[in-house]
Amino acid sequence: MMKKVSKKQLLSVFAFGLLIGIIGVLMHFKLHSIVDEYMEYQVAEQAESVAGIYNAKLTMELKRLQSIAAYIEWEQLDEESLARIRKALEQSAEGVSYGIVGVGGNTIYGEGIEYAAFPGIQDAFRGNSGACYDKNKGMLLSTPVFHDKNIKYVLYELFAPEMVDSAIVMN
Image 1 (tube, rainbow, N blue to C red):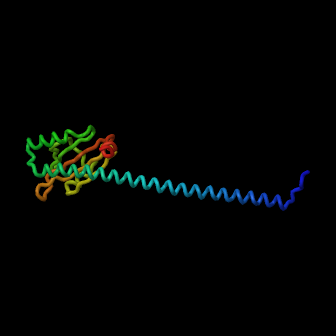
Image 2 (cartoon, one colour):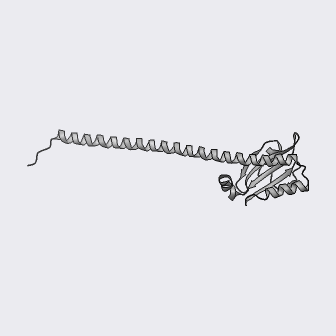
Image 3 (cartoon, rainbow, N blue to C red):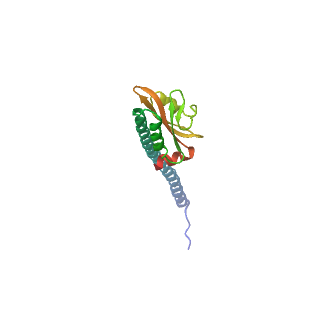
């Protein structure tokens, strides 16, 4: 036998279902918000880690370049010492080139560099080592070569655009 359901009972079931539905929607939005915040945090942490790795690798490369510059500083740049430097620099990876630029802008070793594309060369002539990037030409690391307190040359290392990631991350 079928029992008649009163309006009060029907209204209670409907109100309960509506309440459960509202709670479900609110929980969905809250969980979605929590997941978004967590993902943002994780991406920020990973980006910071990758930036730290790149910074460490670039610092290592700059220190290596500075040690070569220190060697050049103590050597008179004659044909014999330039040949030793060339031999050491030519053992670099494919897509990586080195050069030495004199104060007047003349290229002593390597291929010429466009100063406009790489402001790091000009910074090195002011006594600062650094890195700069041009999407068409690649990444350039440069360091000054001193003679006493004066800058005599700039030593640079140029990574071809396709070599930037592999040269920094894999070295």
